[in-house]
Length: 149
Image 1 (spheres, one colour):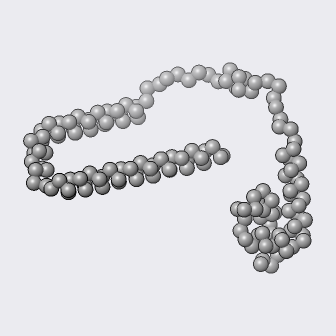
Image 2 (tube, rainbow, N blue to C red):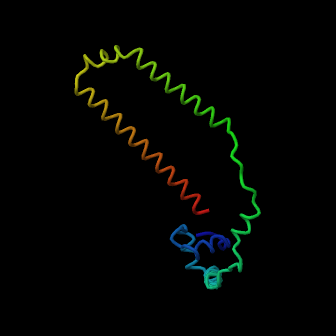
């Protein structure tokens, strides 16, 4: 138990979603008449706010805003050009490396057992899958954060 009463934020959190509250907040409100009265007042206030009609414009706000915006002109971006340039150089370097050293690649795996190659391939595939799932989860979390706010 706490010595004083709960803060207004704690009471509001209890009223809005008591499942997310900490246990000591729930116990305090159940045992304290003053905080219980405040929680009931907030319940009435929140339900009154929810029952109010949603404000609506008599005009299309999106059309008014869009009509005042100047159309954006496509511009040349040096950043994207640099990205494509380095990507092209990288692809050319990989292809050149593959062509120059192709005869050595065939000798690389000749003395290796088939089980080792399958094990290497399986580990590589599982690692790539886990990384892909992790990237997708991070993306979903960021999109949910954007949608909530």
